[in-house]
Image 1 (cartoon, one colour):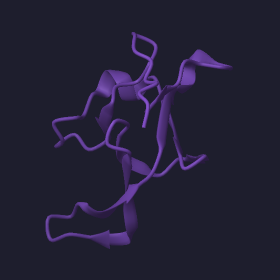
Image 2 (cartoon, one colour):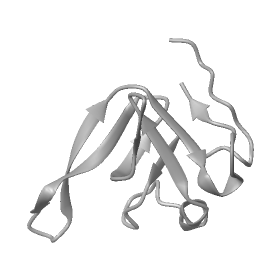
Image 3 (tube, one colour):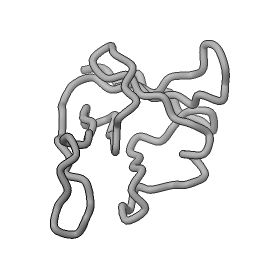
Length: 95
């Protein structure tokens, strides 16, 4: 797999999570709005993603664990991310 990841201030990080308990949580970057394309389909239910490792984590229905956190499933495949506040044709981070 060739590395085509673009880097810079207008490209989302390689690994990002929406859960504040995660070490990959970054509120400033999430406020900008991050778009995710997984296996060619734009997804809006992604809890966490990693571009370089090629996976996303999505909630498994309405099931909760014993601490009240949603149970998630890790799906593997090609992942692309971009900031939605940049309008049309933003720079896309992909692997």
